[in-house]
Length: 234
Ligand SMILES: O=C(O)c1cc(=O)[nH]c(=O)n1[C@@H]1O[C@H](COP(=O)(O)O)[C@@H](O)[C@H]1O
Image 1 (cartoon, rainbow, N blue to C red):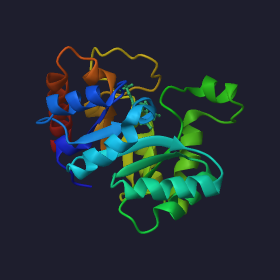
Image 2 (image 1 turned 180 degrees about the vertical axis):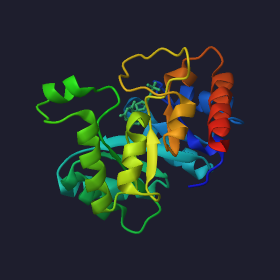
Image 3 (image 1 turned 60 degrees about the horizontal axis):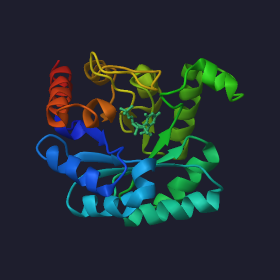
Image 4 (image 1 turned 135 degrees about the vertical axis):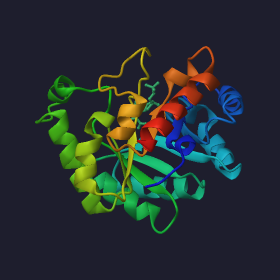
């Protein structure tokens, strides 16, 4: 997958209002073209905003992490496809993934399966009653996603190389939990730096707080794009 460095950075617009999201997009206009709208903004007018951003020519990742009965997931996915967004997330359970693939149909929407959240480690899986390590669980989910016809995987870049070996070159690997040197880890447990993520085979890097909470978000975004470009050139 050959994509320009700037298009591989996905900025998470994890802010409370559409107004703040619009201001960030304006600040980052020359630095980023791909934006993620997640749960916080979605419940504050963000879904309509996602459609507007897509209509304005940006790449949009609608991160709703769907997981429900098949009929509901299939129908919600169809509505998301009508918004013109590029990516939609669902949790990596087989029934949910099959329903999303059916809802996507032949539209341009790409379905991403969220494996083990990057804020989880082996003990969080055990606490949820899920047997096996993070590495084993992500590998199983990636293989199931490939079988079902999912378009991409969300995982930590710590698993990117293993996932790439399972899914092959055509599925997108989208990695949150990115932390440039010196950035606060926050609630993330499986973090990787931008250059290391690219070297591990990540196609897209999702970055929220290290950019949106930085004193100078544009500078922070430019530094990450620079790291992506340098690592991709090696
Ligand atoms: O689906 C996601 O985007 C996602 C999956 C995951 O496993 N971990 C994860 O952090 N995310 C999202 O990626 C973003 C990471 O934000 P920061 O930790 O602020 O960089 C947030 O919007 C999360 O909702």
